[in-house]
Image 1 (cartoon, helix red, strand yellow):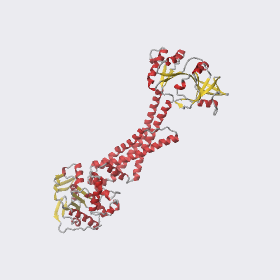
Image 2: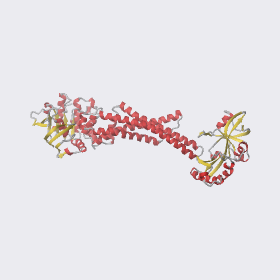
Image 3: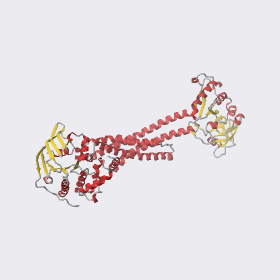
Image 4: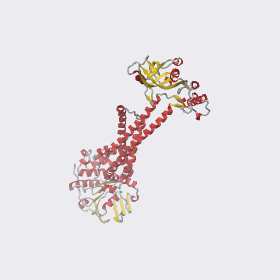
Length: 399
Length: 236
């Protein structure tokens, strides 16, 4: 039989009982649309995690000390020597050491606790921070121990109250007055920390007035390109082993980590999550497939006489198998296409009205339509085979 | 054209063996119009199925155009039915919700006849059985009994078969419509087609040229019809 004839014949017979066809196809539609929308939620979560972490800078390396209770002496801290050693590495574009502390900020008598980061003029560049108003800390601020602060938008709101222009206001950190010289742009939550609720001051000022020592909490390193990350990481490790007088990298008292390490961990979690969602949706597809099989079996029984006739006028068993398989595949493909449209619509609705991040990928659509046609093939095969096996004489007598 | 040599057919159902045909030898020439008669259980249906390549004999040989088809495989038998045989059934077996033309064309779907030729052949076939143009696009359930059976005959004719097999073609029709259908068979026969018709009514059988009577799986008599009844085709 020609393909065109096959399709016409199949269409004629599946439109013969519209209610039954509709209900059977509905099973596939639900299956496919849930596969599409659930996968889109999984992939949406994945890509939003990735883009959030991307805002930190994908060429960022962070050096921090492995905290050790037993040896709390200054030789076990990061120092300016470490910073200088790292600055000499050619793959390093900029270095921003930081001192982190949590102190009370007082403005006009009201106090708020906020994280304070003492750092240098490279920090905004290394950590992808953009300035909304004013300016960031300058190198001159660092060398001359200026008492200036750059605030995040959330921190500004918490300390100064809403609708107040923060620039040039003076806030008291640990009792010392700091003039606000800049406000950063909103960046949003990243992992555990809210980057908008921070106060940045010159590292020199922080060390002299807040922590009282020369130690550095961590060092942020901007690498020249993303491709050089692994090599830069190795070179930084080597340089620090040298300054810390450690011979063996396995006994290093510091950690050099990149954002990709974090991204990899989180994306492997969200991949598992996507898979889990897909597996749940796949179950509904199997149920839909069983519906197809049930309908096709009923179909074969009802059309026994027709099958007998077709055989009598010269249809071979293969012709019969192909005909019934075409019907099943047509049913499921049809359901697959409608299900895909519905799934895409559902993802759109989830994003628009429920604020759930979704990503509909072409591959998931191709997969869904392919799978639905495959279901037709698998679940249609047994009924088709049964139709082909019917004895023409018995079938013609069937009432 | 047809040569049946000592055909037997035994059905096995559980412990019981039923011998439906006990050695039947028939020779039918091209252009003959044979009626096979007999009460139910005489083996005429079994004989019909073997003639129609729907079933294989247990022993004996069936030569069609000199070829022994009793040894054919399933696939070869399907091919034979498609190319050389045309069936007309008692219950018509038209596809429901399908037009007359499409019903007639059905056998062509399993052949390589091009789409453009099919409609022409179907219309030619419908004309040959006296179905006028205004009924061609009618659905099968919109046709009268006589029209339905003539559409079924048109379907049997479309592949220009060597042999037309009709199994009680008038069994579900009234006398007047039966006459109409029989007249179509007679004309087709006059045009040179070989027809084998199965019936249990002597009135119907008398429209053929030769009557073979069967009883208990054997041929009881094989005679030429002396006072043949001729049905006149009514113009519609």
